[in-house]
Length: 101
Length: 121
Image 1 (cartoon, rainbow over the protein chains, first blue to last red):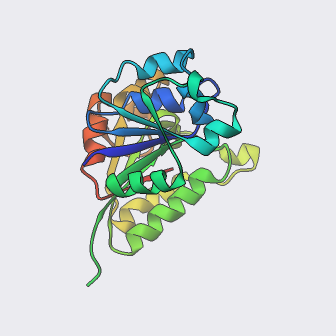
Image 2 (cartoon, chains in turn blue, brown):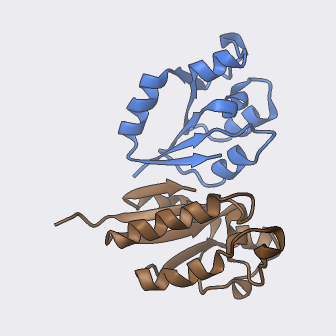
């Protein structure tokens, strides 16, 4: 079964994203939440690590992006913004979810 | 008849940063007490939880090793550890307080995806 990985730690302040990416497989999805959304900044080093996984669906929580001043034009194009309802939809679509914090 | 499911607890944090490790073990034992199949997977700093020779009383924390010792009484016999996590931290499977089953990093994703319920700790 595909896994929804929820990364809430900052890519620089924690190893959450790196540790997660070391254990994803094809068909999995990645949701950036809380400080994890900083990885969606298009010019960030963390974003370059996301580029390595073209078949990974990447989402970011809009309220967490807004709270941190991350505007649409600063976002990596590979990330899809979702709201809390979208989060619930993902949790339903992926029966297994794993949090990386 | 209650349904029996496969629970996998993924432990990724070191033992003495707070009460997290302790609370995780409470959760693990409770789940097993309800006749569920329980497996533990230690990744990243979580492998430090199994290191031998810990004396947490030196910093005022409770010893969790006896709780790990109780796992077998609850029929929890599958303790999985990622080899790379051990190696990166200078540990070996022989230096752990309990016998474990080893898994390589590239096997972890597939292992997780075959469980019914996965709990991140």
